[in-house]
Image (cartoon, rainbow, N blue to C red):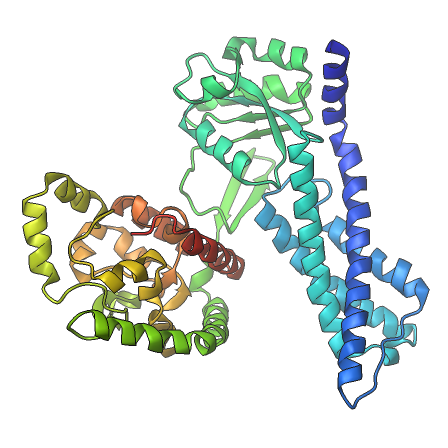
Length: 484
């Protein structure tokens, strides 16, 4: 048994050499499959159309040159040599595919075979290459993690709340592939971590623990450490390991667009933060994204909107829509469209209910919502809220320019005073149908936490974040996580 354990550990430490080769092989197969799928689909389109055009790609390009271009850009994106969150891996694959297709077209042009390649084939190749590269990598990662193979052994210094956040990230993201050996801490604050992982030693025993375990990656998750204590740990650990990371005391700061500059003479580090949404071209890009995707969404859901409107009218008296005032961009109020899910005298019903139900009153004070049974909600309203269908008319707000698909929560005018300094940050952009608050718990999070999440989204905005949040919202809604 001891021999097997040593071999398994040795295999984990050699993962940095074996895994890149394994993923290169899998990516090569994914690219070949994408090429073959694109050719087959293009041939089917040619058969169905009067334009009889068949892709003609020599074997040299099909099996060697085109895959080589893809693999070069993928390697250059660092996804073979760096463990990254899976959504960041997908982003890098996306850009690598775009660049690879462009270079492949140029190569085929100079190779005098571009005349045998159609634009439809190029589009199909890009789509399928992106899809297969992402899915192949995802399932391979799943298999490796399930088989406990090629995981990077890591020791975490600090067993507090920050370490708990890090562990949750490691558990929820297959892109990282980490094997936590244990923690080093004098007095663990966390009550959960010591139950799941061993405490390997104290701060004074750090060097001994690292040498004994032969770990090559250490993460310092103790942002509360004083500067001298942190520097002492870094100087002690760095000669013993290959990779050393530490979490600075900047939790909640905008990090999505952060750049590091090194001032070597003065031994200083500059952290530059960009406000993407303050740039005109980014605001235009977000507007174009909202308009295109909004129209794509509106066309298929239009019949659903009509059916829901009929159901609401049959179920209870009152209007179909609940057109409430919300705080918009630049602190300008606008009408937010929602399907009515409550009875007409909902305010009076709520007042009586909170007066006779202390638990519900406390819940309302903290969350500004009632979780579970809500006497104000109609029968159809319960069903609409469960699947967030009451918010579907907000697509009209997106098309008219009052809202965005993704953004901060649309707040009530009466909540301005409670928003404090977050008001100016949040009203810097359009409110969204969905956002970070939607995928992190919806009505399970407190009002103050919602404000922090909305501010973080604005400070870290990118088109890619919008794409990720839209994708995750679909599964959150279908699973009814945090639904009323």
